Length: 99
Image (tube, rainbow, N blue to C red; front, side, top):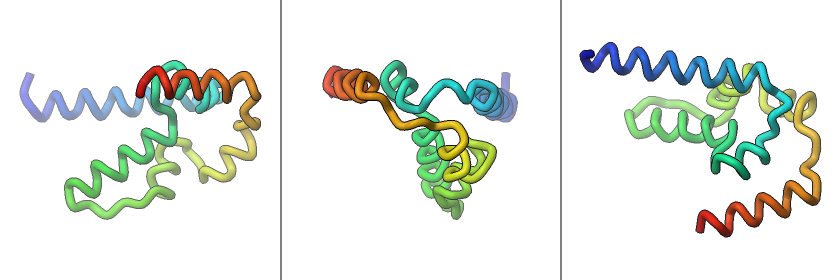
């Protein structure tokens, strides 16, 4: 496998991950953070950071649109209920465990 093929595969995997997350909107960001240590917002921030590292102009609104498939505020309104006290407790415990 050459470098171009590897990059193409990596890009395809990212598109597949984003499609999978889009198909599973019931999976809340806080649950992703608890279990995996990253969420959709992390992916958007990573997109911006990698663009900036390469001298490419990108902002968080653009990146969130790529990750969420719609404006972030709309996604939150439609799909993201407030975190429960139990979720917040598990999130804090997970953060402490990772520190």
